[in-house]
Length: 216
Image (spheres, rainbow, N blue to C red):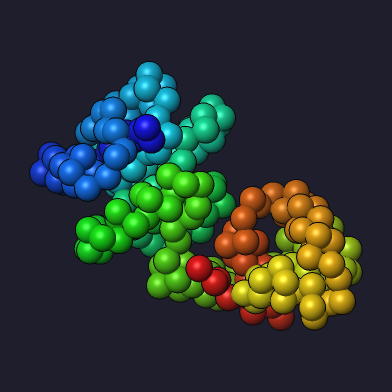
């Protein structure tokens, strides 16, 4: 059975989330927590598959809890829940490897779909949340960053992936095998210190002349 720990500082929201998950999924709720420190204790104790974290919590916010999960190398897939998430928070979350972002005013069906996808190892990063964050980040700062470390071929691959092309489309455009594109992506991720296409798009958006497009 997939397991989860829930964290939100509002008792009614915690109860609602617990009831929704218990009544609509086969995911087992191991704990529901009020603040970041309580959440870290519960995560260390239970080691769930998933963590559903409110971004704004007392003591430690959801992003800080997430960074400590990564620091401890716990294999916990994180979904962030927020009433209002800012572009900088979206960028930080994606860079840290978040698996899902859900707004609190979303329909319950969206959260359930997110949980189902993330439980299977996928990601739930809605275009309407991620793309504006990429655009705002691009406008705020234009730097070459780690792109200077890429080979010419890697830059060609990275720019096309950041523009929203699939591996097959990149392969067709550059006359490469899809396996070769995957090898280039592995090297690109390592050099740019990212671990997914969305984080690559954000990194690319900071480079002058690159137009990044997130495809969910």
